[in-house]
Length: 332
Image (cartoon, rainbow, N blue to C red):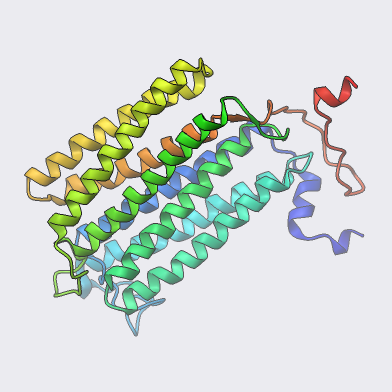
């Protein structure tokens, strides 16, 4: 009965988005996830981490920053408001994925995963403020944002491919090498958060607790993992050429080289210039791009068939339309 339908079902019965629109909505979540990472870094680098002294309000007596709080309060509050923009973008993706017929439950599940990651990271952000920028909580805040970026990239990929059973386009050892690259890049990201927690940019001008480690020694470990990631990328490129892999993954490796090269230049510039804030901001952007391209490269090594933009309208009775059968099934 119509009265028993939830709002998403009602929308699905009246609106049929194209496959291209769903892809664009998925890409928008990737872009917003990167923006959240970069603007979160801007809060720390501008010493605005405690620009709002409490959470969920900005001050005990005000939801918004006051004039006395200056630019730091405005920066911190603006970053909080971006969470609502992110929720809207994720919501559009969920609605578009749900309204699409035939229904692709994998896409809606990924959309809801993004939503709950946003909600949980908002809570972690509040704990960050309430604990006075505890470096371990700050690190978990960044890693949660990276998890959101990961799911957003997966959503984008799923929105661009079909629903056939995954088929490897290279031999299993090649895929294992790609997963090793993903693991090394993830370790590089985690070590980067330790550098942040031990380094000089604490997020506030006042004395803030830091991770009790020599940040220069941790930075050297971070650099060592950069060499590991570069080495694995080079090995994967030669391997893909040797096995005559499809053009897409080989192109993605070259694009990854460009990201790594740019990130390496930024890393050395920030080190020899004494860690200027603006350069560190670009370094955070570069780390997001490297992670995106590593994930895209790994996902490109399997195929799930083409995505068919069938344009099948939602049935009038509210039931799901039958999903199209793969060509292999139709030929039996």
